[in-house]
Amino acid sequence: MTSRVTLVSPAMSPSLRQARFYDGDSVDDLGAACARAAAGSLPSPARVVTSPGARCRETAAALDLDAVPVPELTGLDVGRWRGRTLQEVGATEPEAVSHWLTDPGWAEHGGESVRDVCERIGRWLDAAQDTDGRTVAVVEPEVIRAAVVEALGLPASVFWRLDVPPLTVTELSGRAGRWNLRLGRPLAAPGED
Image (cartoon, rainbow, N blue to C red; front, top):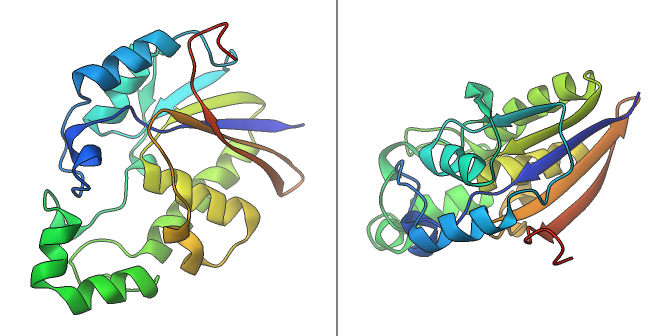
């Protein structure tokens, strides 16, 4: 049995545009329009899930997907940094940002470590591999990073070296405990391939 997981990153939102740690904001008008234009471009799924955050749920709706929020697919919890820009945090806590970007086990911001999110998403992927058919998951960029790290057995230290642009597709296919990766396909309006 081959399982297929299609990971879709959310449409543009103010927090993405401003490099601000996600605080629950919605997709912006342009992001919603781009997602609506891409509706119908994904292969037919057996199931559709989403991160619980507003921008993922709204992106799924704009893509005309009836998605179920899954708590395990929540983005990386950044604790006290939520809602602040990376530049703001870097100005007030430069050593903490340095540790966060270089030590996957660091979580002194009061949230979750990179290693923890990778392990959480790895458990979800293990369960997904036991399901037949295609799963489409509209999820936060860091969930996609964690999925790639876990699927390929990469060290968590590469997490921040994986860029996930808005409205792109990362595809995993797997069987017998092994995943293959196809990443970075932009969502396009049907017929624009």
